[in-house]
Image 1 (spheres, rainbow, N blue to C red):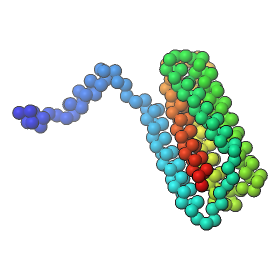
Image 2: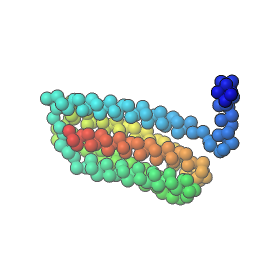
Image 3: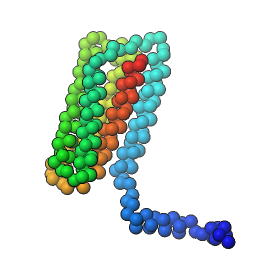
Image 4: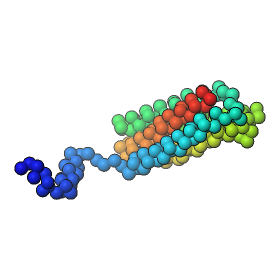
Length: 205
């Protein structure tokens, strides 16, 4: 009898009841902004993965000449790590409703990101001064493309960071900006992981 009862059930009615049950249980749907960010991160993952595959293949060809290891890149990586760390602290502060701590951590995280930008630019200038131009060798071209593309995506994150800072400066309640802070933190963590992976790839080559 239970088997025939299952056959006679209307699945659309069951799904509707499940949705109502979830809503009554207080399980809120994922915010659209977070869903959009997830799609963005997936697409960025594919882009950087394709670049990594192309880089790995290209370095096996005989005309590849590896760049020297600029020591400043290690410092830049640590600076980006600190930036991501302070964004994470801002996210936790937003959850606890600590408005002043949100502001402080966001400011430090943004400042460290700008330092990372300057460090990357300085590395590019030094390599150019030493004659490692993009057109001179495939390794040079890949280096400038990777660092430039990563910096471009990080600059996009700074736009979101700036908009979040405006909300914080206006004194908007912490629970209303918690989502924006969290999205910034997730984006920074993702770009940190991407940079570490790309940096490791460039070192081993």
